[in-house]
Image (cartoon, rainbow over the protein chains, first blue to last red):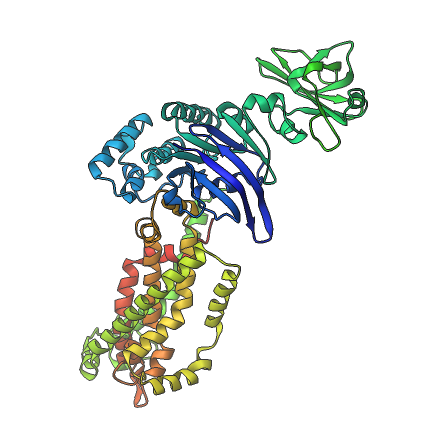
Length: 332
Length: 276
């Protein structure tokens, strides 16, 4: 079991309120991603759940029982840190064994679990090495190994992939998703990378300045963002925002349209613009278009699209994909 | 960025480094050489460098006249005792400042260091009186306490810098892994800080060994360490350079040998945290 409930949880450092009172329900077995720009409070929220920070007010329940004042060790959660936080003076085996040793587990049983975890994580050949002799990806696996042997009720990941290079990050992303499917244990994952959030999560929690902006499945957030912040944060490249006449025409203060929902034409369309830089990826083409009023619009066209620098083009939004916002930035 | 250094340049750098090293080492070398000369050769003008009648006579006289072993034992007791006592107090202090800092931690560190800037002679009188009242004058215990106190700021600073280098996340990981505070300290922090603790211990031992002001002023005969042993040879009866040199050589030999064998640790301890 691994359900976690936050009730009116808040956190202040001195006079600064980092997290205003918030409620959140995390169901057993769910893969929840906290996403938001840096400084939005996502890591703090994770540390509150872990017990590494004290709550200013509110309560945390784990599996239905109050864990607000429990020490990190008593909460039955395991955490994987961004810096891996391995014990440099211990071998891989001893690192993975550490939580079991702290729990006073019988060494024979502990060894069985370590070997099983090492097998799953491809670490069998490295058990006698020190963390300093491993690559970044292997270190991250050791950190995950140390977390899984305890069979915790939930895993907490604090930006675990940000120290890895791009190719390895994609691999590890898949491995973590795979692990979630195999273990079916609750996972809470913190990242500032919305691609990670979209690809991994069952449920995304978008945070901004300590507030929860929206909670939902990746596609819910993509298709029906509740406000301009979520609309702009989720999706890559970012959503384009246009105000003025086009917005007025649609009874809105401003409108948003995703780069992939624009139609490009050489001779007619709602907006006229000049092509700036174009990026050709083969599978997609990204155009950066400067409109006549000076604003920039990103366009994503599937496949290859020929467009010369300085060429005049016309853009039209697909009407059913237009997001309308009021003056406060809320979705109409 | 790496800079290309020509061979000539390298040779020049080496020569300069050796020259500076020799200038620094020369007084010690001269003391050692003089200790093997006769009194007449020791003050001869022009001075003789290597070609003189080497003699061990001075060492024999020094050993005969004063009990070297007693001074040595006092030095070991005072330097060792003040180091261990200092560590017992400094480890928890540095620990809390490094890992649970308050708003005033930086101020406290600076304030502690500022006590090192106070001229020692300024507090000699009150400490002397305290020692008389408490019956600590000319006792090893008294000296141990004073030396521990004057070196404590340096020990705390060094340990603090060391502990600061240990990433807090590792300690948090230990906490998440179910370690209680004592277990976190025993299994994770201490093994990671051992090199730092060792070099702090060494440096403090050397500082305490070489300390002369307090050892000369607060001891007479019973608790006098090797610094007092050397001083007793610059006597009013006249200057005996060769014997003074022999006494000095005997006093610095133990610490010089210890320093030689632990130089790696010492350099690392002194420069730790300087870069990065």
